[in-house]
Length: 600
Image 1: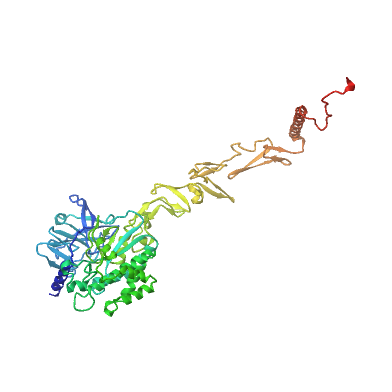
Image 2: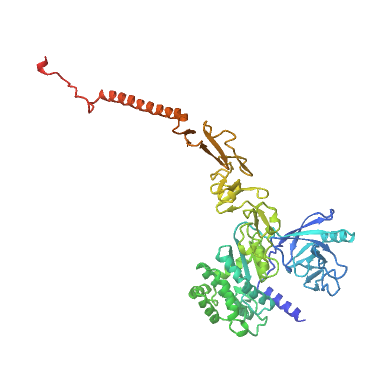
């Protein structure tokens, strides 16, 4: 009886204050049936508000249709049925009849000839409900698909499905934009308590994401207008500000006691103005601190839900109080408040987003979030909104996603010796992408092959080339330039990648070929020497000494020296003759240019 009275009161308030159902958009994910062959295919399904959607992920399981409690209105423990998966088995999907019934937890209510979907809107089309275990992901499918699944199960066939949320949220770039539609009212029961708990628990993660530029967050507040015919009524005056333009329901649902709806509107406006001023100062994340502190320090139960307490919180956070007061304006004036007017306009859905009519509502990348208002669940949804490989580290932490690179390196290329891998963990899974290590770029397909390229490539695993140290000497086939080639160094031959073998210069007669020379091969080089008493000259590949047996060598050398001296003298005389034609030289007499009279 009490529930019916409350329902009538809320409906009356909606009618009085201009509420409309507006445009509702069903958020979808995909369902793929992998067996039997008769049902194979891709199907659309709606994301349920109950349960926790695995945004950005997938879930594979086997469908079970219970013999009892087929509407799932009771706990399955009450009918002695268990759907726990056996070790190593697939997860279990429970198929439950929906029809003219609405399942909320484990209680059902008959709603005449219509059905109520997961967001409270009526529909004549009967559907069926898939739930995985208790409070896990859920989806709504068409009745025709549900009937086909039941038929296959009754025939003894195994039905396997894959629920896919990877594209449930847009993920266009490296920043996620999200909105939280909330309320400052803390006397609306479990729903209000849930909102406050979420803000407190999510505050730390939200502030980190915002401060580092990963997200752009905006809080919003729902208000309604009072129809013109009722503006002067007691209800409108107690629930609205600015001459009936912005209204909220009574916090206690009792007009005769406690706070009024207009008190809630003013506090909502103050929170919105706080965000505006903090955002203008470059610190939008302070909103989370203000809302948290206000809920703790200024609760309705302690009669502190007022301007004085709110101002104390604002001052403690160092935000300009005067600017906030100017933003709030005069709630009693018959004027439009720009902040609340913008909020009402934003309530109306655009594009892929439906109208916002229910609190709380979370919108991520312009799509309404479905699921539990919980830190981990919401963080997963936000992480699903990042373009793959751009997500922050918090999205790759344990408990948020599974690191697929830990098992078999994700099927990607790796160099165990250098501890380099092409596997890159992402929130959605993993990508095989040749890495950049210490400024050196690796190129390849990322799956079977990656190699270092460009300058400094020899610094990383020797550029993938051959390298060996022996007898205190180290040789490498890596050429540190813009090429990717591996070339065996002088004294070696081979492919330069897997092997380079020593060249025996002595055996192949590549060195030490003079008659008195002795050749000794070494790893990567050689040594030349001469018989006793002789000296090896590497430049001429010859041996020299003082004994007669090598006199011809000295004679040859003296012959070369004399030839060079003669050539020098000849060149000197030629140069002097040429220069004498133009100027007197130091050792020549000056040639007169005219004769004397005595000689004539």
